[in-house]
Image (cartoon, rainbow, N blue to C red; front, side):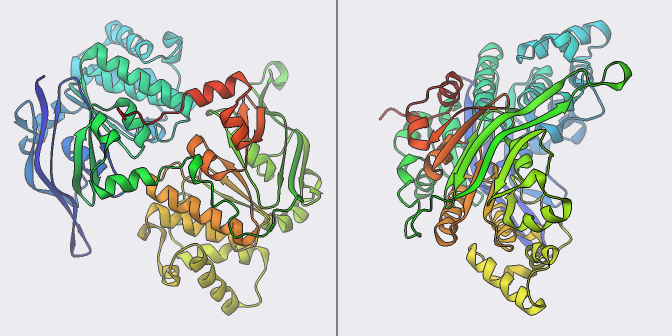
Length: 541
């Protein structure tokens, strides 16, 4: 095969407060035409900076201090910007982790795909329109002639990622850089996108640089693998050899951090005897949203986001809710917390039916139910110090005798979630993703809740940090007797962390029961489909 990309001794550094940070520290790798090269590593290891360097999209604070990025022998680091603009999108295309932030919300998807066609292939008018339709059809979007005139918000997460793929393929690139393209997707949509990438690669012969922290996904797509840590490549090998026999200690650490059923031994270890008392009991819960209004302003129909859900969680137990995007998982959580008004049904929290409470009564009960979100950074005020963020709930509930007591409580809470008390004087941007999530957990614990709702709290974290957060949640459950409603699309997390699992599909719970029973002997066809889509690490062992 012919060498397409050759990265030689690449070094990139940042100037941060008069200090130089080596984000990429002398890495070498090659990608051949038609091959998939996976770059693995935890957050901050330098993976995304490497991708941005190849495409010359580094922030102004970054500087390439040495090395070369050769694309068919041409050093991209030495190209004038005018020539580099001809490379981006045409010879090297890039898709990002979160398509929603990459698409323009005020332009139709057809216009956005058409921009690339006009820029790099000089297609306009009818020829451009027909090519847009062909591209959307190629990436699996049904009725492309109609959907090309729709806006990004009218597409699901998986469909948005397909639109991003269509935009990337519009320039007929030689190299596609995919930076965590499936991290935010559920397992069924992820499987569809990975299958699509493989098919498109076979059809076009393009090479793929696939950046991920998901070892199972890398195992499914990669021909070669490189592991990055602290800006350096610590191990590089053909995929089969790497997944059969990882050599470097850091590679082995990534494998050890993977969640699976064998790591369930510490559930309730050292904790109090499990109670049979119900903390949360949901019966016949429905949330219906009115659809587009018809004649005289009447709803033309209703979207049944949650359609008759019943479940129960006992004290000290974890109920995981799984399902694909749009199945109703998050709406279920919001309706339980009364952040969305249920259409019908009961939500009993420690004996009180929450939908029947007045606003004043509900406000007092909010201390009993707290939530931890998927993205900790967006759920914290960037202008507030950590001490104020953690203390905010106590102030809202009017608890704590005085400022000194609340300040002491902040110290204890930070230590409880595995942080030093000195973190209270930092701001969110000064913390890593895992540290931010620990702060969000401390904030939730500050009001001593009975129920903690965790909405994808680890999906944006790399495997080592994910393992730390799951271990923390397990320890807190054992020590405090916390009850968790845990929403996730990671079946490995369910297998290692939850006591019970409920499977949602089109607003309904189609199956629920003990984790060991549901995951090993699924009965509903959708559960079987969901489990069959979970990527697994394959090797020659």
